[in-house]
Picture 1 (cartoon, rainbow, N blue to C red):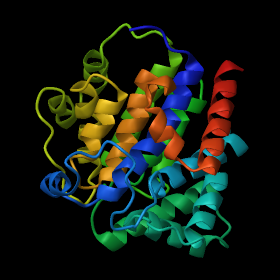
Picture 2 (cartoon, one colour):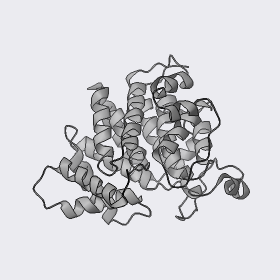
Picture 3 (cartoon, rainbow, N blue to C red):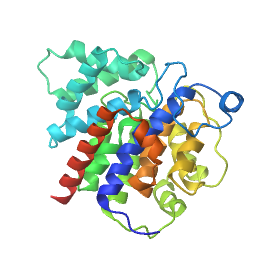
Length: 312
């Protein structure tokens, strides 16, 4: 495979999240049989669905990804306060959708805002309160879906992984969520660190998923349709499996979306990883054009900021 510029990789990963989210939103919570009956195969920006989305409209997956990215650009050495401020502002703005764990942790943090403890501790306490209220580890995909930017922005992979996990734990305190954020950030970072592709996607994914049986298994067999609840392990398996068993960006994202379930989030996670592998030029032009102009402008600006940080 030919070399891809670092800027194309970064831009591809960011745009990959947005187009995967927008492609999958209209079929979120559908089962594959329903998608086939209604659409045969979703490969265009159709709009609709339970959120009544416009064609190309993004959802909370991309919106929270942008909050993370903007916070990192504002305060890269300690972005938690800047990210958290954006999470609260976004939630108060009445988005069409917001996941249960994210809504709970953001609400908890907003109520705790007047206390005199470090902001990072406040967000950790907010997520732990969400976990206590649920009575079990919070292992949804709501942290993983917004994890792409640390791996794009930070030059040191240890730093990228550390911030990815800390940012994930602002809302999701579960160990499997934490693990998935770390692995995903590591893979995205490594893809931006080298403009060459000496391995196949299967070899690359196998190397970085070998210690997690569920992810390693996804490389070898057909993907199983996930439950609509959005378990983080299911979403990571889908991203890994769809990347490993398809030949290009479009194929990977279309495969993920047409599995149904939490289709927008699975599309976003798969799109971010596939965009980092194949680069921006591999994304269908019609998908990019369907995104709102202000979304494209923001993605371009944040991609430039990450590329500049990595080159600086």
